[in-house]
Amino acid sequence: MGNQHFFHDKVILITGASSGIGRATALIFAQLNAKVVLASRNEEKLNALRQEIESNGGQALVIKTDVSSFEDTQRMSKTTILKWGKIDILIANAGIYVQDVSHEIDLESFWESFNINFFGTLHTIKSVLPEMKRQGKGHIVIVNSLDAQKGIIGDSPYVAAKSALDGFGDVLRQELKGGGINITSIYPTRVDTPMSENLNVPWISPKISPLQVGKAIIKGIKRNKAIVIVPSAYFLVGSLNNIFPRLLDWFYLKFRIEGEKVGEKV
Image (cartoon, rainbow, N blue to C red):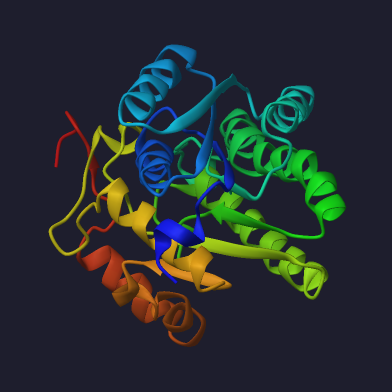
């Protein structure tokens, strides 16, 4: 069954849709004749994306949403159902990149990261799940990060929130098994998005395109994958970190996987 037929007339709700992975994924779904719900805090960018989708014959709905607010995500879900009567697929993608030195434990940095990266995703899923349970079917994609499988120096608040999300997604997938609602967790390496535009990364671990992640999301949904690593060549990172953590520590340090912020001294 081709992607065009598989996703035809499906209602896809995407958070963090105004840029990066969310934007790229929305464009792919629209090309596959899905009905796309675009949610983020940046209404101007969402409207520009909607116009692009509609000018190419697609269907899109803009809902300005702050995922850190449960009331906002509830409104997002209700508005979608009022418009199109269902939610087939949720792409829980909204996130922010918060860096801080772990041993200094800046509590504000951790609160900021968890508020969007963890609780924002929980708010979104909690707002959508009742409708999927009523339907008896649905698919939830949790956009995580490879950082959740191997932490990077300087990324502690981000890694902590994504690691919590990793655990939550793992349990949720098991609890919903057999009920018609599927869970797919996506773990991309660093992606070339506005979130990481001020970060230079080493040649051995280059940024990947949002389009590459979007295509992996499509494939993961269609094949009902539990876990998708992007690029797939990184699939051993988590296992290696469990078996040889200090070896991977050495590798990350040797090749300066953390990269450097633009303007910082090497």
